[in-house]
Length: 402
Image (cartoon, rainbow, N blue to C red; front, top):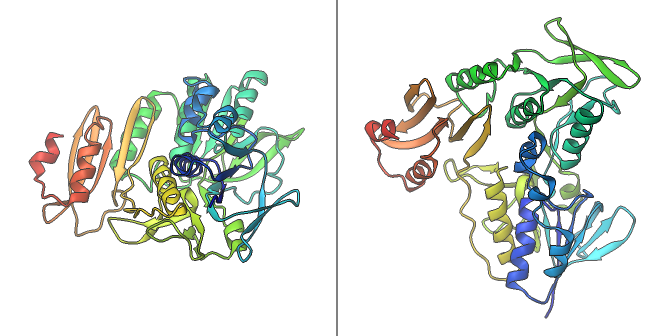
């Protein structure tokens, strides 16, 4: 008997699920709904698109024509406002309803915004999260001739944004509340290594400061007042201070949640039968700690989407959990981290290999690898991840040779 599969969200998990569903079930109806008007795209490539190294068409993951060829209904610019799980029905913002046999909630995250008075609706204030954000920023750079930008936040998104803007010829200042960049992903020495590369790329870095207020003219920011008393001038301002899970819809659906996302089991099912969650909104088992955590990496989200599709069609496969490798590239270098490298437990031994052109750190406990951090020269990521997951004994000599 044919079914109706409904997917809310068209990022990595949603599109992976839709494609695999069609492979597993040739006849049933598949509906994928996105509140964005653009075709689904790879968010990992947004910085490349903004830098000009990728064209917009190169970042799409499923166009309307491709969806039609696969007999997948792709509903763009539509927002799901309610999930009536007792009757297996979703409600759209226009009041229309869609019934489902199995539902995937893959609604992801939204950028955090600071509580600054009169910050809404300013013409030259943006976030760095969606394709529409990047399109607006590029329009401003090209049409309004933005020449100087302030990026607030030095996490992954903030640094990727700063690097892309710099490649567009924009002078960039990065403002960070913490003492160093990427403070949740890397250790202090690695931060200094990358901060030196930022300086070489003429990017100014201001640490231990927050934005307190704006001076505006004609709905455009002219100056920002920061907590150390400084006043910074620019013509483009971008907030990249972290993400928050989009929990409003899951709460309406009645699925079990925690502060950071939807609780899922080993098959991506939520606390309600036939409702699944995947991607940035889902909490999954960390293979290293056993804790429920958000994964928030593109490869993990895709795998979760595939696992969900198998469960939806009754061919359940167990999701192994995550051993997330956080990786990115900016200022001419790559980095990758896995495990508690930013704040290692005191019981772990840290093995460091630092050279002028790279910085490597490994965490060991009783000759077993517990985490790694590679800044530049990242070719050993796959081998290190395998050593970590298989719990293979390692020597310091082996690690220093990588």
